[in-house]
Image 1 (cartoon, rainbow, N blue to C red):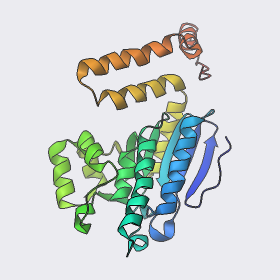
Image 2 (tube, helix red, strand yellow):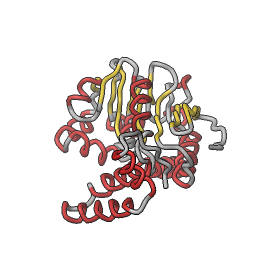
Image 3 (cartoon, rainbow, N blue to C red):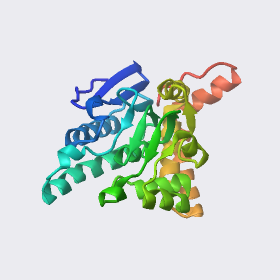
Length: 263
């Protein structure tokens, strides 16, 4: 896959099926600035349009201290209102592009994730967090509120009452608490290696099936149960005629590992 170089993101293909994307501003704890917003929007848009052989993405942060410390407040210091709004429009589009990316995305939260940093992780499909990581939606301390879908994704993960408590108080919590509350899937000694291991398992499954399943969960949760189920069946039926479905059944009956082609 031919992807451009980015100023604020480091890309590494572990093989043609798994891509590691690293938020790469370690000097400011990978804080989200305008350029990073543009870079992420461009990357997610490209991967949605032309995933090629890629089957899974792992998103992490540079260094060991932070996944992402949130928005770059030094860049925002003294920023005019119209510039702030224009910047946030870029961020909004990047969040939506991430949430709607057909490929599975695992957040490997290698360190602290605050404000927009936690919102980036919440926009991924699930989160593996390092034991020492602390997380927070801290915006109300700054006279703001979450603006990267935090008020939507956190309640869906932790429930309405827990989300209100965390957002209203802006209190930080550790990875273990995040696990107990349903925000974090796994607490790890090495979040990146754990995420890569699971990414390899995902990439071994039928890519069209995984993408349809992701689409069904993502959009189905926005519907009532019966409508969501109808959406699921429409997604299911799209797979019946695929070569991967035929290969999966053949491989099962022949007692061998399937060779999925994404067709």
